[in-house]
Image 1: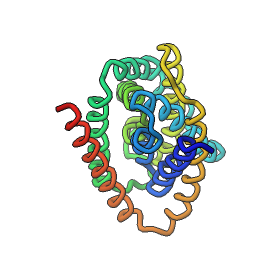
Image 2 (image 1 turned 60 degrees about the vertical axis):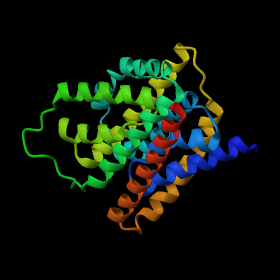
Image 3 (image 1 turned 90 degrees about the horizontal axis):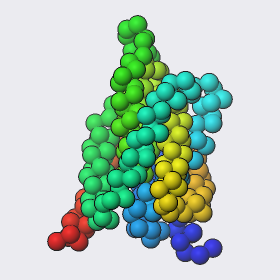
Amino acid sequence: MSLPYLFALLSGFLSGGALGLTGGGGSILAVPLLVYVVGENIHLAIGTSLVAVGVTSLISSVSYMRQSLVKFKIAFFMAAPGLVSTYLGAFVNKQIKGPVLLLVFAILMIYIGYLMTRKKSMDDKRLSGDGSINYPRILILGFLTGLASGFFGIGGGFLLVPALFLGAHLKMKEAIATSLFIIFLFGMFGLASYLIQGREINLLISGIFVVGGSLGGVIGAYYAKRIDQAILRRIFSLFIILIGLSIFIENLLKLF
């Protein structure tokens, strides 16, 4: 196995392991790992990440499907705006130079790391109220998440889960399960967007990344049960913030 493929397997393992350990946030590592470990340029890495994260999310959602926790009607409704917004996100990132795009991505990493430090556990009960679905909120956040997916190559679970929990009044497990399926749909929209725009996606690297991610996810989930999640999330969030800061400084220096 050549070095890029070995690095792709390792990168997938690290991203999947982080996802399995923390229950979220692992996909934010995919693009930096593809750029700095595998050696892809940022535009190619975003496309590769879209496919890899999408397929990994589908694999992760299968067990939830067996428990009937994935709400397909809501998933397709929320993903519908992504048909347009994912394409737009992919189109816009094509116009931006690599260092600038990495600067913006670094800011996103820092923000997600900050959100993870503030994340509180939510119980598995429905919110009080009549249980009606806030369709405008679902559509708007679906559009924004699709835009972020196409632009950054990320899953967008940090937007999807709260939107499904608060906007669709799903139980927490249902929100997580449904968000994984939506991330898969956004990944496929992103793949189609790149193909329509005639842009390159390394499907072999994506496939190897998925294999590593699946293995890392299983191992991460196994150890997650044995580690204090609050402490683990704080450590991981700090790790993401530090990586984001280093990427930001590096690319800011490149611009000047």
